[in-house]
Image: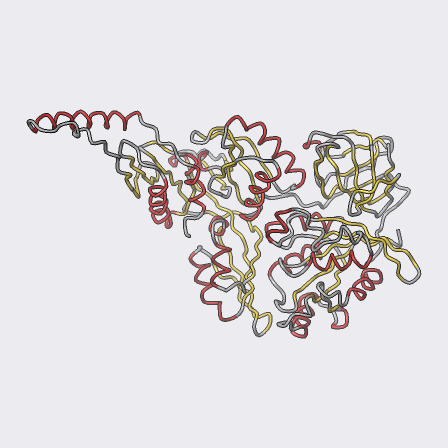
Length: 596
């Protein structure tokens, strides 16, 4: 145990975590030269295309230092705010963290957020300035920022470059000499924390765990504390580039277990593994529960694929524990699932992974947040879907979730960022200068306002210099209403949305205009209306296609033509009574891009 070090890398998005991990792996020769490539731990096509880490990745490295052989367990973590749950899970399995800051960008919002997560877990922090070889690098200024943030000395900060490999030997020295060895009792009953899992179609669920006390041997009978299930450990081992089987995994080490479980729900991330014959007294505490922030409906394009979509979501949930879902039905779209996500990027990634990895053709509805609804009789409802909203006469008050948003930017963009946040119903709480050219703005604002396009607009008005992070601060009362969209006097529940009264008219008008462009013309006129209860606040009409019924009249009295036109008029009136408007898939996607 003295020679084991468990650590992770935390940083803001695009500060070079995966590149530095490559240099550490290269130095320890944990992967053969043939298998080595750029950002080797980002093994998803989606991660490589977008240049971001979506999943935490663990790898074990052997390293000789000072005449001793050390075992280093590295966990590379994502940097985007939407994947902070992945970060919290990685921290739970570590004793230390490498805090990475880009020498040209300085401290960003997510750097601070991830640092607080690590400090709360009691981890030892090693501050590192990365990308010192870049033309715009200013390591002296960034060192001052890090000393103020972490409270460290200047000599504690390591200057490094993930691209050239400069400073990597100093990082290894700090990992071995500064980070504590794992604590635990090898003779106590087995206690192991599951921090990740994945589904293999041949072997079932493979769970990744960190042993806190005791040892886990191959063929041991294991018990999962939270789910109450018992299994036999068919295979245990450590996490190299591939899974490497061993006879046992000892105290303080990180490994994997294969039990042959095929049902995804029987293994939960955050669960404790112990032995059936010699169980531990209590499970491991302090593991953060996931709190979905954004909800959206996911429906199969073909209703026959409903059960396949359910299986795909179950398997995806294993690999992405922050995804939450439950079945729901829509009049317009049929059977589907109401899914909870940590943010809009998370929604986008899940959508793409379902299409790529599981070959599912799906449709996603407008993202929503959850609301607390208090009724006149004193009862309380949680509303994830606007279709579940009770009649307004029964509602006493509605509460919406609020967040504390932290924006770090350059001084010249303060005015435009403030006006953007005020437009989103934000309240400025604090403004402070971290350095001469770096300002921190703290706002309290409704979560519903940042769901759509806030992050994109923030990046465009600040030319990419602003960084953004947020965390929930509870629910507050708001003047909220349910906005419905009617097509040919029929309500389309998939377009219903909860919105603040002051923004309802503008949003309703935009929706009607967008749908008018997308919905194809019919033989009868289609009115598109936005309504609050029984009050229509916006309307557009799609004119009817006209068949020339008088074409066959080549002469004669006008009454013949009038008779045919009257007959057509009656037919169109009847058509409008019984005609159904089919909503094309593009309409649901277009609603997400209303402000483009």
